[in-house]
Length: 249
Image (tube, rainbow, N blue to C red; front, side):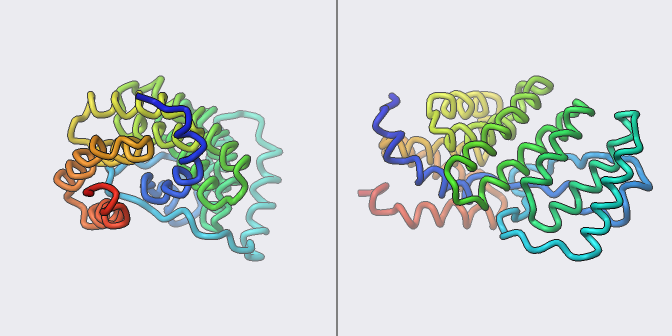
C-alpha cells in the first residue's frame, strides 16, 4: 500500500497542507493574571473549535517585555515545582498572544512535564505545531513536529483512544514523512470514532497524496456529510475544489 517514492514527491505538499488539517483550541485566553488564580487547562471543544495560530510573530510590546522579566525573575525564587505552574501559564499566555509559539511551546511543555495532565500535553503539542506552521525552514519544521509527537504520545498514554489526539498525531507523522504511522493513527481514530470528521478528511488527504485517488474520495465525502460546522465544510470543500479534476476524472 505504501510507496517509498511518495515521500519525496509529497513532502512539501504535506507540510503546506497542514493549515487545512489541524484546528486548534484556545487555552490561554483568560483575562487577568494567572498568578492570582490556579492554572487550569481548558477542555477540548471538538473538531470544529479552533484559533488561528499561524500569524507571524510581532515584536514584544514594552509591557510584555516587562511582564516576562518580572515573571522570569519570580520563577528564580520559587523552588517548589508545583508553585511554578502559574508562572509557566503566564509566560505561555504572553508568548502566545505575541504569536511567539516556539517560546510558548517550550513553557507549555515544561508545564505538561510537571502536571502530567492530558490536556496540558495536547496544548503543548498544538503550540509546537503552530511554531512549525509559521516556519519556513524544513529542519526546524521537523524539529517542532518531533516535539509535538512527544507531547501527543504522552497524551495518548493517558487516554489511548482519544480520536482527536490520534488524528493530530497522524498529521505530525505526515510532516515527518512517515505515512505508515500516519495511516495507523488514522485507522485507530476511525475505529474508535467512525464519525470523526477530521480523521475522515485526513485519511482522504493521506490516500490522495499516496496516489490512491479513488480511495480518497469516500473519506472526503464522508467528512463533508458528517460536518455540522460551516467553517470546516469550507475547508473540505476548498480542498475538493482545488483537486476536483484529479479526484473526479
